[in-house]
Length: 511
Image 1 (cartoon, rainbow, N blue to C red):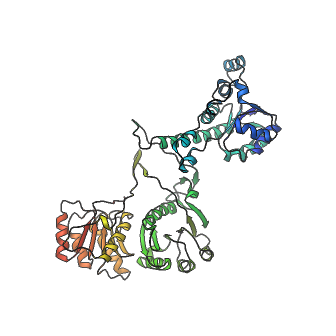
Image 2: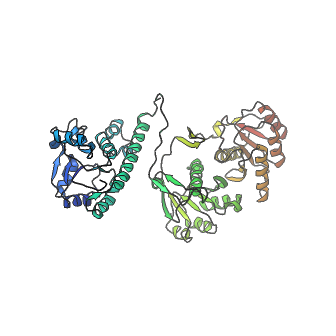
Image 3: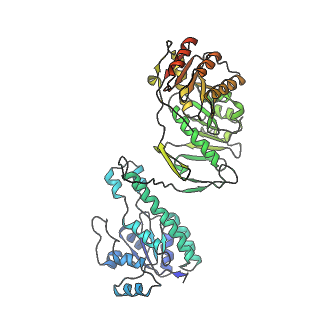
């Protein structure tokens, strides 16, 4: 029989908010209520008559509440099959009443980990009875309805109101799937915590992210797209349309790049297709934006912009003259926000501090690859001068600036810069020579004089040709990781051209 009335329910929840309307509905339908501890008190305060689980089982809660529902009379009531005569006979023999509804939410394990709590406090938030109840009820969805989150209370109340206290098989299967999604995510988070810094023999990759946010489409309109994760933990969206798949990819690149400039002078970066087409630092945020825009105003059209300081009115006035998709900032002045909100679809994101994952994953072929996130950034102290001429203080500042941008640009890449301003970059080229020529051509196209500027490369130079081309263009200092068997040839070319070269020993490929 597909439709089943609810005659008995077990409620044991950590969060009691939003539960009252469902309790009142169950009371109206004369449902027998079983409960424990704090939930029992809540139900009784709502005027409900409640049977304590320990009265059902004949066994008290023990070990500080660690064991209270783990008993055959509870799990038998959930798991026995109503269509099996043998199960029904055993339930009657052992005095096991049927339980048709299980309402359980789990201890807040993730929230406790995120709070930085001591390990013992975290361990105590590993739910045992609750997750077992959810799995049991979800397994027997043919007969039992399971509610695994307070976010479901309103919908379940409406469902039971509409169907006069009963549910259909389709309803129960739907909520069973949601319960298994809850338990699998919960277990993944526990594994991630307990296994940190521990090698687990034969361990498989376990990934779980929620909630799921459907996107308008994926990379292209014919592709479906979904974002899994909590964007609200990172951003407050103050204005504009829903973020798209491509917006999110660009926003991710923008946030990663601006993390390199979180301290110090006001900084602005403009990105298009995950690559920076403008980056600058200056004494004011307005000047940093103007300088970033001058790098490539053509590519900046329709781009993603990120800054590291509160957007003031002067900066907002400049920004408002450009069509862009997204603006990300740690703050917006009260007189700046209305100016930026004048464009209906413009997305404004208030960025909040959050710790990013230490691992990166990507689907590939018929599997997934994982790597450590690239969290290394080279400072002047990491530079090793290998030429007769050392870079000046200003050139060193420019080299540090250029190297930060280079790290976040698609390989093969060459970045040309002065201290505090990107001049041009060659991105995603199959040849490093092509990347350099592209950068030189772009810089000249936008009126930049390259004499005295610096160059950064994401990987070593296999031949001295890039150095020779750069020297001819007026570039005076180079930063690169080194590691080629022909490094000496590039160093020699620099010496002959009067250029300075520093090595970092760290490659930053970005595919």
